Image (cartoon, rainbow, N blue to C red; front, side, top):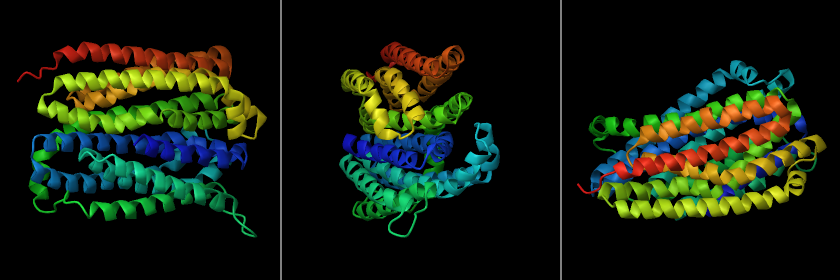
Length: 424
């Protein structure tokens, strides 16, 4: 699973690196779309958490027929929710992007990119929901393999559609989105074929199952989606803050955001693969295994992320040179790498605690942790740093916010853990 997540996030970083070769303006235009793309991903992940948690509990209780009905129901409903959200974001693009600080030059580039990017986001969500179904049934290998396949397809198509070949000049910025559309379409075909081999879906009795499962599903999905929607909202506010420093800073911030997701690949893999296991243990009343899993996850995250962060911070000038051809963008990106990458050890810990909270039956606590991380720790430090010392202060403030968030999340988990009673 970690390899699949690495491949998926790696192609997104390479995608932005290709776009950086088009110039600062296209890279800044793509960076302005990140917060709204994260909004779709937030809803998608929130629904995916609810799907995996609900299915794993039902399977853990041995209710296999109900799990088949529930699997079909959530795939249909979740796909429709993302489609409606994508259409809404397309309709409101003329109002939303100026609020993020995009000016007229960026808006013209965004318009050509945003349509195919929304289509790619919807297809990616359908694939993700299929992955959630496999993970709930304990199969994390197939999602990982398909992530690698779709990433390779995207990487092969990116340079062709962005820069063209021969006399054809390519599509430029929109070419990156169309490459993703084709990659996710291929992944969806492969996933559907594998899903047809399993008896995990049922189409009879869906209405009665919807009435039965809706309260429990909503009880997990609503707080989980609120938790997952907080990062996109924070991303919008942080983009607005960065936009006050200029287009070059926005471009560097966009590359740093892509690098963040790649560097957090192990954490993201754990947030997807750990909750189903925790949910099954929770359903079976196995508290000892839950505690061992959480301790192991914490040690692995802190050790890996700290080592990776220090290594990349030392190599910051060379990493920035690899990702961008603009000297000003490189300087800002190197500064962000030095401060932010080591702080992801504590950010990753916070993310895993939040995902665990949804699986362990305290989604409201997980939602509160997400809110505190972003709006009490991260954004105030980000804004204050930018006001005091520009880009350097912004980078330092973001790092301090991550450290505070991780420390507080683990403390809250330790306080919440003794109240979980598995003796009944």
